[in-house]
Image (cartoon, rainbow, N blue to C red; front, side, top):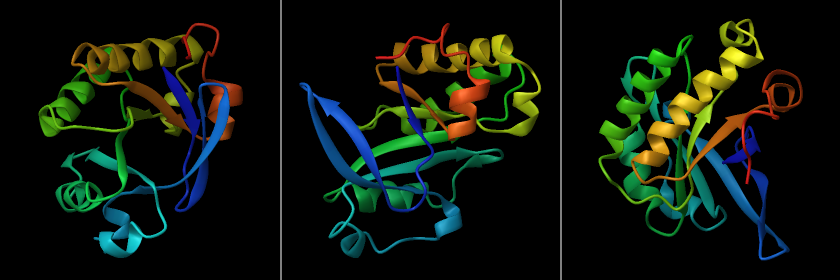
Length: 165
């Protein structure tokens, strides 16, 4: 399982490969950014993590962004979580998998954990929620990871019970 901090527009993603540090310029994209011109974006950006699903359904820019980014940009996706139970996390995973429908991804399906109402649940509950989502995603054949901000990584996630590669 991979954990990376929240990507904000254009930032560097540090990836370790065969012991060497490799930097890729990446962005996260959702309907909040509209519909980018991917020909322009691909000239400077190497990785795009696309919001695949929002609270009420598929992200309204996902199809545009997936099709556009596939032309020269490495793609992963994220789901911002509103789950407060394991059952809700599993439903979120099912919704993501329905949208993906076996599409190719270069990067993982990230579970975006940073909702303040989840933080109040405690580390054990959040770990159970995360595991439920990530297990469903990996059983479907995708790589999975947690996408969060630095505060969540340092203070809220139970990094001892969640296994990281």
